[in-house]
Length: 528
Image (cartoon, rainbow, N blue to C red; front, side):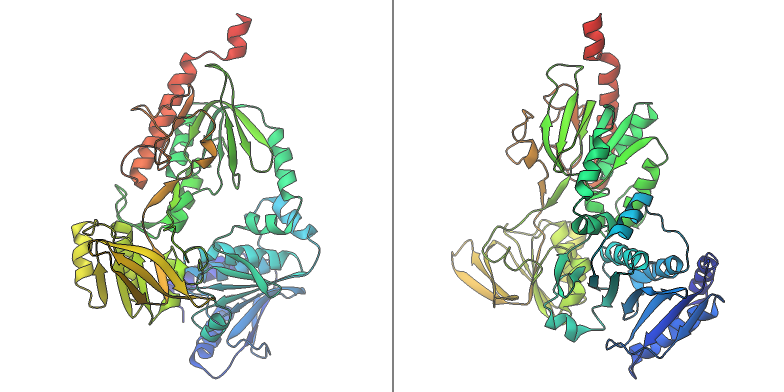
């Protein structure tokens, strides 16, 4: 199962085990069970603290639990092989069960330990899903910390009948005590916040204790991270308040146009940005949703950001880098069948449509790239573009044309997504030239029609926004409000690209620096 390099790497990790762990497998006579037996045998041979048993009686076969030998009530179960993106999750489960401390905030661990009630999680993942490991690892840590929490992590490709029966059409898909809990990526803190009613109150109390910043960055994507690094290097007290540090990077797989980096992946780049920010004295405050901006009444005064948990932060200068999100079609059926055939991430959800007919809405780079990837998995792809021609780069269009199972419809307007009440079964589009409506039968619709800036919360703040909701900035990344700057996909800067966002974030930081050294704080000016 494991090649020589993986075995050597795993052996090095297992050297961190502090106490014995047990692997207990429930296997059948199928090929997957044979592979699971081989994998667990190899793992057990790598360290004396690992033992394996093949006498499990769980109905899901193949599956296996990982537990600490001294505390069998704390366990996590993997159903199917946790390889691909989930191999790291397997390694972490082994280490945590063996007493190696997780890299989690002690307060978070304490909050997990305090949870009362029985929480039985089942979570479905795919081996190609780059959003799934965060959820897998969060549930794993919770199950190995609190004996009243269990986690069964299920590889959807191995348990297709179960996936079909539960109408799982998008991953990660998490169930709690047999009922749907959440569809999509969640961090450990996100899961905990849904279970711990006091989490928001405690977070607000911590924020209330903070002194005003010299620079506060709202948003933790490439623009926000770059801005914080630059201002921290200038010696200013800097904070980042982010709803999800890394932003859209977590939903981006292959990145091949970041200058100086031939290839990387979004989640990896997000982790690198967080590590880089961590090299400086930046106060990183994650999972904070901004709700209101109260601008300073005069230059040199304090701007205030109010958050959804009721807390607020104040700052002398403000950099808004809230990014953007996928644009919705806004047609009947889209919201009703979200995660029931309507999807936005081809890398995560594509494998769930293997052998089926799907559509991709959008003919730009994102849409054509999605169609190319999906055509390798599904039976047939219909690309529907509103414009009279595809707008993707020619190299991508050439690749698309080379694929035999792709049909392209241009000058076509999607008017409805249809379903049978539980899942998508087709869509309706109108030919813009003829006005005629047509129906296409299919199992899934991937929406790839661009971005919407995350700026709704700023509409009544006095900040100038474009007709598209973008923050209007000048060549120095300055807004119409003194001391407020903006960068990245939430602004009017053209071309929404990672490398551009990084540059704009750096520019906004340098402009904030210039503002701070030239603008005397209000309290000092009044004293003079």
